Length: 149
Image (cartoon, helix red, strand yellow):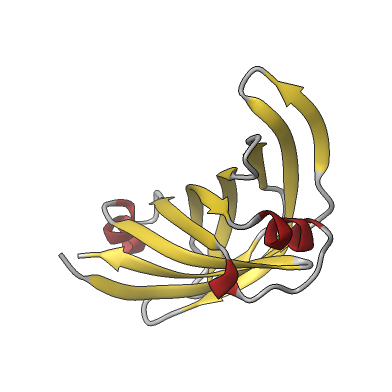
C-alpha cells in the first residue's frame, strides 16, 4: 500500500450553527461557502452549499462529517464526503475555537475521503479511497489528500 498525492484542498467555511447538546454529543453545522483544489490529476473549485455536520465530544474531540460538491477544471461535478477527527490539548482547541491561527503540528486532524461522480472521466476516483492531513485556519480548512494505492 502506498500514498499518492491527489490534491491540496482549501475549503472556505462560514460561521457555525450551534444546535447544542444531543444524545450523540454537542452538534454544530459549519457551512461550506466555496474554495478550490489542485493536484496532479484533480483540480477545480469547491461549490458553496455543503457543510460539516460536526459532533463535539466532552473531551474536546470533534467528529468530522462533511458533504460538498466539487467542480473540476474540465467541468465535471464530484460529490465529496469526508469523515475524520480533530483533537488536541485543551488550550490548543480553545485557540482554534476562538479563531486563532495554530500550527497544525499542535493538534491531530485527519480525514478519510470518498468521491462520487457519474462522469466517466472520474470513475477512477469513485473507486479510490483517500486520506488527508488537515489544518484549520480562521476561515478555512486546508488539507492534503492522498490516494491509497
